[in-house]
Length: 202
Length: 202
Image 1 (cartoon, helix red, strand yellow):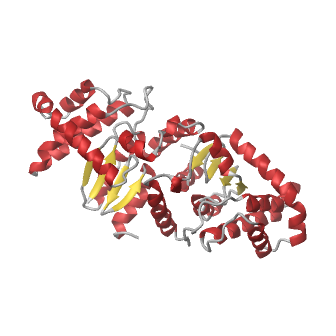
Image 2 (cartoon, chains in turn yellow, blue; image 1 turned 90 degrees about the vertical axis):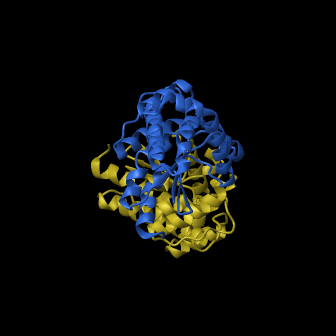
């Protein structure tokens, strides 16, 4: 199993999200997307966002833009950063909840929603901290508005459970990619993940 | 100019040091090695070593061993970690001081000394915090013991100046590689550095 753990406010999470499905497909694998609330885990590790650390903030902005160019994906550092992400993350789980019945189409719809939310934040600069953005992203991938709103309370509960799972499994960053039990932290580990899939581990 | 900034107690610095010269050579370039005291800069950024952070410590050990296998270099996480590195870093600058006269042989001898110190710590488990290790590394690359000891006070002064330069230039991590003014932090940026050298920047 390949799991992509990410927070909707994480720029490196966005960058990894643009690559991981293609990498998995090259090895006939699928990716389970798992948005969670990184801030809740950071309270345990005592970590602070890279851009909040003296000296590192300027570097991070430069590295993010450069990495996006390196990967060939659009990226614009949002003026409002960081951001809360609960409304959109809960929206993901509201959509994905139907997937528990084995409906692969629902899982793909949830991923498409996630891509839309990430694009809205890291290309268009719209923060993932409002229900308005969640509703717009959901509509853009064909999710029925009433179904979405009806499932939102369950989505929040699922998000809390997934965030607890992250704490339990020491998933302390975003993106955090787990390949058959092997943890990889950071968009910069994508080439190593590709090799891991090629070789079955090294 | 390509600068490799590193601390002798930095495992990712060790890993980058095993690769950077070969990368530079492929593009007919040379690397200026600059050991400094990362701890002094971390007092400014408030950063703590990765292995001292809850959850991240286990991950870091795993990632270091895996990255070493990925690069095909020997690595054994030292039992004593982290370590101070002033005695060996001052030793580097004691040896390199002769290089200011334009003697390329001295610069190469200092790099060979650095490789020896790194190997002693991250392969043999001998901490870089003693004059004994510095002297042994120096002897292993043919440095005259008396010349080394005579230059040591100047080496300490140069190390302090270089560490101040790191603070001024926001060099907050190890390895920190600067390619024609473009900063790259981390051994994981080596592929991007290679592309930067190939293309002249992107």
